[in-house]
Image (cartoon, rainbow, N blue to C red; front, side, top):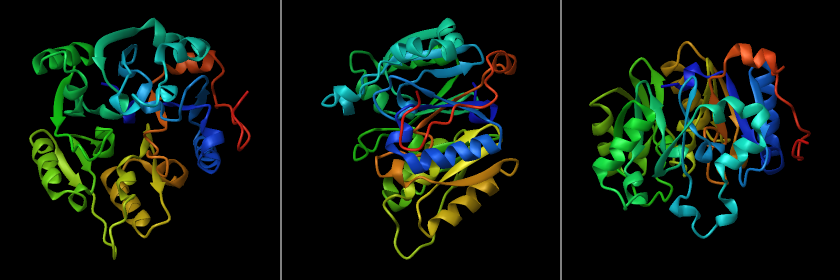
Length: 301
């Protein structure tokens, strides 16, 4: 599997500069400073690229799926057609379309966390595909991703059922687990028990006078290669999150990004991004040394 540590290119929705102008400016500055290619995808319906863009299983293999999650059934205007986006942005995404595999499952990328040769998902995938048995769903996923699977229970109080709000791969068989024990000790225990069968689990913990409702966002950081961008919320937990993530990823450069604009909309840095591994030769050939930088508050032309 192409994990975050193997990626070198990151995409965002062209709506991001309009919806989150401060966040967009900070991201652009840091990515340019670190010479990481980034660009924007046009014709997206919202800013959550992670949810609707295909899963990169291998360097030249991308897995598409049916992006019709139940949480959008009353908000169809926000339901992006992934293949339309790839076709409309074909000059940037030609290799993605050329090496596409489509699986017959309702899925969204926020529920796919790549941890070495294992994909971690919540059991919401079974709820979204009731026309198939659990064994059929597992077979389709294994055939599509060509990797192992690990399922976490779905806390139905969290309607999205996204595993990227629970766990993040730290490399070398280690995973970071969010501070879910402060939300639900029951589910936290079940997450930990499931994960520890295959990984060394590193729990994130925050010492503060009162647990903040947005502290979940720290686990939703963005990693491109050896650069890690951690959401900053203006809380005392910000520094604690930075310290713990830096310790878990000692070979990475860890930077904080003011992310409240996205977090207040329901997601964080992993949610707004789509990072992939792109052949360096192709990056050079297409002149992608650096991404376009739209003016703050306006979508790119």
